[in-house]
Amino acid sequence: MPDKTDGIDQCLTAVRERIRAAETRFGRAPGSVTLLAVSKRHPAAAIRAAHAAGQTAFGENYLQEAAAKQDELADLELCWHFIGAIQSNKTREAAARFHWVHTVDRPKIARRLGAQRPESLAPLQVCIQVNVDGAPGKAGCRPEDVAAVAAAVEEQPRLQLRGLMTLPDSADDFETQRRPFARLREIFETLVSAGHSLDTLSMGMTGDLEAAVAEGATLVRIGTALFGPRNP
Ligand SMILES: *Cc1c(COP(=O)(O)O)cnc(C)c1O
Image (tube, rainbow, N blue to C red; front, side):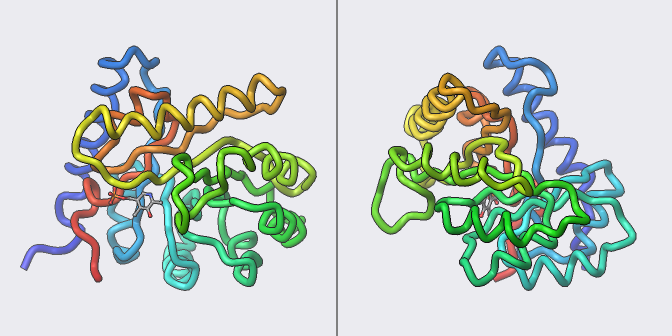
């Protein structure tokens, strides 16, 4: 049976080439889009293989699962991004174990992360998750609430606001994929015009990477194209 980690280096190369091709096609500066490898529901060995192939930034969705892998991989220098839903009773672990959190969506979460970020660590890098189409029941704050969440993050000295993140419904055609990303970029530009200093648009996954790069993504979160289908 092939090892689960076989081929990760080829997949990494292929995804990096996909990103470069999209940068070229959409007039983006070479190297302006960084790759976050989403390793949820894949074993620590897969992360180790990706690290051996030069990948250092990894995204995880579940705190307990992430903690186990972080402990197992403590000998490596990795940058950990939390991209899962964040509950207010779980902020302490996120604040202690991650370099980035992409899913801050209300002032309460910002205040808790800010209070709980250990003094011994650099400020936690934060993106605000936005529910761009405002569909009820979806994660992320409404577009009209982003400014208030941004202000709450900026009040916290242990947090550094970096930008915005979105996770739209999947769509097959390119123009449909582009729309929520364009909307997130507009919200981003509005915040920048209002004086917020932001540099990160976290958007795009395996199925819609190109549409996200076309609309200005600076960080794409890729799981399936790197690691294959996830364990249930
Ligand atoms: C799982 C996940 C991804 C990666 O999705 P793929 O389609 O496997 O590339 C990206 N972002 C978030 C928030 C996720 O939960």
